Amino acid sequence: MRVVIKDSYQILSVAAAAEVAQAVRAKPNLVLGLATGSSPLGIYQELIRLHRVEGLDFSQVTTFNLDEYVGLAPDHPQSYHAFMREHLFQHINVPAERTHVPVGISEDYVAYCRSYEEQICAAGGIDLQLLGIGRDGHIGFNEPGSSLGSRTRLKTLTAQTIEDNARFFDHPEEVPRFAVTMGVATILDARRVLLVASGKKKAKAIARSVEGPISSMWTASALQLHADTTVFLDHKAARKLTQLEYYHWIEQQAAEVSP
Image (cartoon, rainbow, N blue to C red; front, side):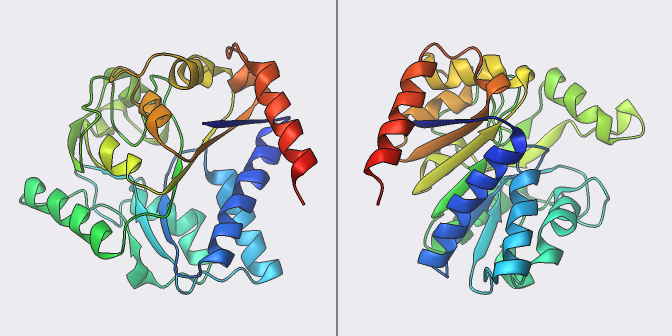
């Protein structure tokens, strides 16, 4: 696991977006896994800038989002469909038919979740997956205790996640209690993973996930098993890591040998 520590959220977002842009240029028909929440917003803003200013082309890219609230229609203002339209899709040239966000309303969630996995497989699998991380170490909506072998499924949200998400809704009772989410194993199947985190509230989760034992109680810790994961952090999110000097040393050495 590569750990990259930057001076600010803006700087880490630009650095992470550069990795995504490089992947798109290297493989124009990239299959890109996307996340919602505050963590990837800076990346999306930079990707939009790269599209507008430098002509970064998303016309052949296929996207799959991690999750969606159960009970929210795609046109609901707090749905992740709406989030992606507002913060990325309507600003770049990715075709609508190539974007996939889980559906939060279904008569048969088991069948739907199976079909979402099948769509990912049919697209050739995810080449690059973007992730944020919850305060309890969850990735996607794989809450503590989730099976590390899990696939896309219906998941009950924890009280902490519901509390964290309440700020987006007018009334606490409106916050969904369930979500459709890619599973941990689905995420681990991605060929490459970029996780971004900023702020002191994420420091414990980052320390447990990057340096702690692999555990279903901190589902992001499963990324230790992944062959190609990069974690982009600011200093506040990195402050509880014990190997900070080593992570900085690795990046310095890599910079010296880069062409």
